[in-house]
Structures are given as C-alpha cells and as structure tokens.
Amino acid sequence: MTAASLLRSRAARTLTAGLLALPLLAACGSSGGSGGEDTITFAAVPAESSSTLESSFDNVTKLLEKETGKKVEFQNASDYAAVVEGMRAGQIDAASFGPFAYVIAKDSGVNIEPAASPTNDADKAPAYTSLAYVKKGSDIKDLSDLKGKKVCFVDAASTSGYLVPMKGLQDEGIDMDTDLEAIMSGGHDASLLSLNSGDCDAAFAHDAMLKTLEKSGQIDKGSLTSIWESDPITEDPIAVNKDSLDADTAAKVTTALREKANVFAMVKDGICSSKDDCVLPEEITYGYKEVSDSDFDSIRDICDATKADACKNIG
Image (tube, rainbow, N blue to C red; front, side):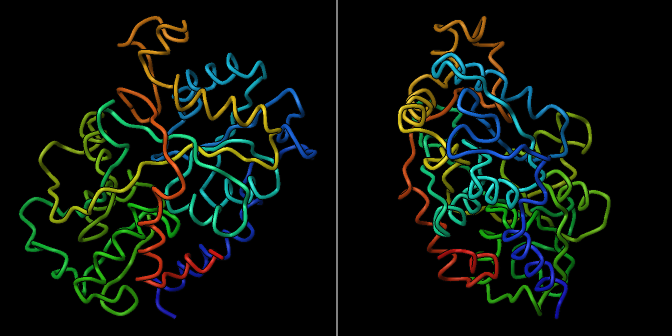
C-alpha cells in the first residue's frame, strides 16, 4: 500500500471511530448535546494550529446564547472526524464543518442541516478556493509538473486541502497513489510551513492561509507563489443537529446564524461594540449568509469523479 492510500485509509477509519478524538464529554440525552437541555454544545476545528479558536467564535456563541436563552458550551475538536461522530452520537448540537466533512456527515445519515457559511462580502456568495503553492523560483509551473514530487496536503477529510486538489490532479492525469509522494500535514498552515521549510515540493491550502502566515511573519511575503487555483467552493457551513436539538431551538439557532451573525447586526444587537472590533472566526470581515444542502452538491460530484477513499463514508 502506498503512503497516500495508507493515509487515506487511516482517515477513513478515523471517520468511523472519530469520537475517540473528542474531548471527554458527559453522557447526553436526546436533546441539549452533552450539556443538557439548557446547554447548546458547539464545536469547531481550527484551520491552523491555534489556541484562540474559542475566542474567535466568542461573538457567535454570545449571539446564540442571546437568541436561544441557553448556554453555549464550546468544544475545540481535534479534527473533522471527531465532529462528525460527535454529531452522530448526539454530543454536539451545532458545528462549523469543512464542506467535505459536512457532506460525509450528512450523506452517511447524520440528521444535520446547514444554516449558514461565512463571507467577507455581503453581496457575494460564501465561497473560497483551493490553491497549489510552490517556492518562488521553483521549476514547477503547473499541476502536471507534480509527477514524482513530494506534495503536502492537509487531511483526507479536508475539502480545499485534499479532495478538491485530488480532482485537479486527476484532471491532469496524475494518480496520487503512484505519481507523487503525498504528505499529510494536518493543517492548512502546516502544509504551507512544510513547503516553506523544504519538506515538500508543493503544497495545497485554502485561499486565505498564506496571507495569514505572511501577516504573522511565519512566512516571508513573496517567498511562496501559487501555480493553480480551483473553482469556487461553498464556504465551511455551520450545521445544526436536528436529532440533539428540539425543533424550536434548532430553528432559533438557524435563524440567528442566517439573519444576525454579521458585523452590522451584531453591533446593532450589542454583541459587538463596533464593526472594527467585531471579531469573527478566521478574520471574517462581514459574517454569515444562508446556505442549503444543495450548495454542497459540487463536493458530491467530486466524490463521484475521484472515488476517494474518504468518500466511501458517504451513503
């Protein structure tokens, strides 16, 4: 078994046993997640190694508390598999997913519905892209040049860090099992940092990560350059668990995210003191907009085309 297929197989097993990766949660009933009827358990996975994930969601959780009258308990999950299995077990009531992880959960029978996805522009659909990067001056000019190279990916359940790149490579006639050496870095930041340090020849990450790493000084501006960009992907949805939440609470959470989880409404409602000080996850500058399950059909189409091992968790 090649390194790539071994890692994908391991990720698929993790999606089945991912509950082990969750923080230890108390046993729960049929509503209220792990915290009981008066608590909503909200989970998210960091796009980068970060100890500030919970604080970045602070205004969102404050909004949900205000709109539902319930306490929101935040869970910093270790990976998407943990979130999927936590939702399936009724231990998580709402969560921020990657698009691929959402599809895996939804199509494998978890009773969830997407409420909203983030955007930086109120007039644009919530979407982002996957990019392939190389070091400045590299002789790699496009995806076809990746044959025989070491390539950093994020995680086998990552949309922009694995699944979408897999489709792009396939379109160039590149087999990830036989034509390159796939390295799973575990995070979008780690993928680009590994490239920057010379551990791989190319790396995939979502479109905002390089700017974040350059801003923090972890990567010198201009030292990495992109050689490929995907078509738009619907942004990470926040999904609601309809099995663990009662219908009224689920509706309040969904309405709050769709109509009030943006900087303008948050300032008006007193959640934030000003637009400039209204912190949202991953430096979102506007907020969230409504999405539906059909917005993620492109992910299903990619699964149909690639037959990726992780997609086998669907259906």
